Image (cartoon, rainbow, N blue to C red; front, side):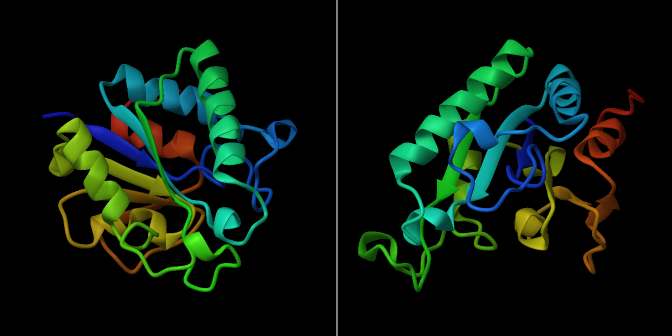
Length: 178
């Protein structure tokens, strides 16, 4: 079985600029690339789990999302960071785009995307982590042995610990001070 770190994207890896889909808007958070490299070198698969309601809202298309995703993965690869998988939810119950207007099991805090990744990569949740800037990013930690880190916020759940950044979470997980 594999160990993984489930990562939210906006506000965790890159600056959250709200419904981001333009390549020119990509700006990695300070220390994020170094943190991702640390986690990868420690043997964790890096898996992004992200809600993308901007698709359902009609702000951008799945193609726009995929182009931005490909760009970010390529940029990270030039820095020695391989993203093993990206799972996203384009749905929203009251979305403008009819084909994405629905209640689903993949939109965080639902755990459908996490569960797909666990199956696809044979992940041991008891040896894995979730990191994000919103409580929903760590929803997999509520009913499993996965542990979580919430950036800049406290959680009522004792399996989710507050950290100041992705880099701090990586230092705690790996036991290495960067």
